[in-house]
Image (cartoon, rainbow, N blue to C red; front, side):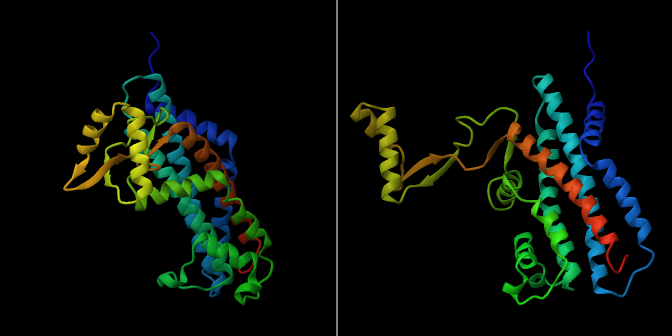
Length: 279
């Protein structure tokens, strides 16, 4: 009988695969070179970007760590029926959350090089999209900056459908019902426990049409509908959008974003090392 691999063994295998397939080794080497470059704390506002670079390195490491554990537990669940999905969901959540954070920190790194904003003032801390617009089209915002093309090129890599899915997940986590990752595709009756009142004519018509399709008998259908009234208001069950996520989709998006964040961290560091005040 073959002994199943332990979670830590699966993690080590996933970590080795990531090292072989991504720029992680190169990022580790670049991180060391960056550390060695910092000889002093320069009294130059452009040095602020160094603080954000350290954050980017830290986040890239955390993304890689979470991605590998996510992959390890996904493999274990696939091979062993009955294994709970908590660990998979936990590390996937960590990975996705940090991918979104990396995107913002990378933008702030680039912005800090050109603008000495105060991170303690909320109004001065811009988001990814706001920074990118200012760096791509400086005149629109009354800015006179130059030599930003290389930084912009790295920020642009943090766009696309995979990063958009990560943003959607983050939005759901903060503003909606907690997203849940399943090894299987979402299916009915997943998420049909939320009950809402129907006020709009369009909603009521859709409710009646669906009921008619399910229950052709007029009398029986009316009894079903009567049971959906609460204090004279018609209610219905709905599925909450983006509540359930299929792991196969999450895996592909997380893989792409993990690889990209690692490589972007490496290249942002290379750009900063070759510029004043570190040059």
